[in-house]
Length: 148
Image (tube, rainbow, N blue to C red; front, side):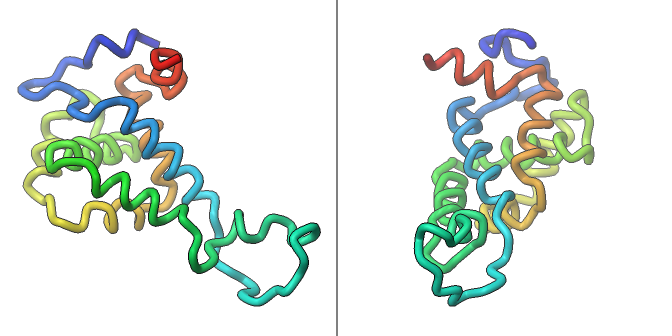
């Protein structure tokens, strides 16, 4: 993996225009959100000792996992949201890394005030973010190591 201080080459805009710490935080929240399942038994009534961590693995009302992810995405500015969407598209294979500018332009052209809802509606969001970073030789480990 390359040093994350070196940004990938792009035609007109540098990748990424998002602080990599923000991407890492969103990635971690997306992984937690992706791991959750729909609630199977809303009122299971067991005690905390043998509830089998249902409140962690299932998306119960009041669970902060989704809201924390939405808040983190909504806290990004317009440019950062567009860069994140383009990164996700590269991660899921809609575009290749060498098509960064094309992906970014399309994200900018289609940007709405519903970016968080759009992204949280994508299954495997965390994996796509990680794959997008990987396409630019950036790993979450690199980001974490830089901040230790």
